[in-house]
Length: 362
Ligand SMILES: C[S@@+](CC[C@H](N)C(=O)[O-])C[C@H]1O[C@@H](n2cnc3c(N)ncnc32)[C@H](O)[C@@H]1O
Image (cartoon, rainbow, N blue to C red; front, top):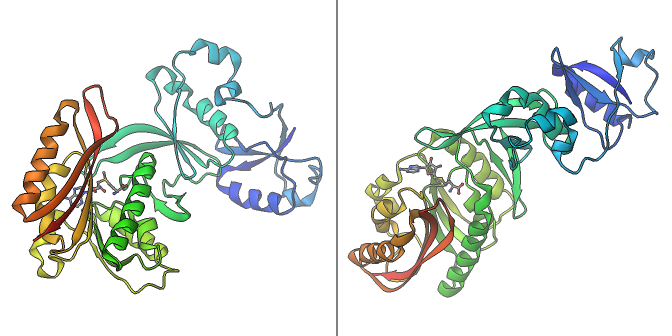
């Protein structure tokens, strides 16, 4: 198959031009070549190599295999067999970024891995090696390996519950795996609004880029006050843009306060006290310690809801439940309906739990 060779930096320009004229061979992706060049597969309809439109660029004939079942099918057979037990078996996709952990044995072949993955996943722009989480805000340490169009930015967009969310996993924590919990937040928020028979006030002090708020504050007549924030300034900068997008088409009158501050200090601002109907506490390594610091924010004399997530020892569930119940009672909670439910395993001895508490503070 004929491929146009372009410098990596010009890939997007040529891709736009070729796609606009329908000259790209469907089902085949762009390949990375040595010397920072890319090869764009051309269909039979594309003009001849000598046409002025190509501005003197070169071409190459490459044999391409079609529609591999797995990305490893696109590796050279001999290479695949040599490292059979070390090829990554799983990866994570966030927007148009594919994140993969590589065993040391296959790191020298990361380029081949990335090319095969780009070819297998036409909607992926960037392949990154996952070097774990780091720093106070537990953000991802990612090293770009290869990009389809030369763009190695880790800023991307995902769609969840019909909302577009801006994310940069190297700047702010984000987990796609918790989307079910976020759906649970929306269902509980609607149940609370129905119980109270009015729009509710919500608080998400560990919001990251704001995925939990996406569906809640964009629901008509659900929320009239939102106190949202994060301690990480990079997260808050994306959070601001996301909140603006989430509320763009909402007519409901809503007051939104965005803070970049340790959530434990919010209780020191008089204006934030005793206003919140629904509190989310998503700081799994520290949730149980932070809950008491947030309770002064909860509204008094009406039903309220706290949903939190924690990583705890498997045999600690009853103890954690009792600790939280004690904290709630110390802050004047009555009619407490508190559940601590395992959501998933975290390690052999630890589990990820959801804490959900309905109560009335006096
Ligand atoms: C587990 S993440 C949750 C992010 C988001 N809610 C989500 O589901 O994607 C916890 C967030 O809390 C922030 N954080 C850590 N300590 C904090 C503190 N003391 N006050 C406010 N935010 C904090 C981190 O920067 C991080 O974004």
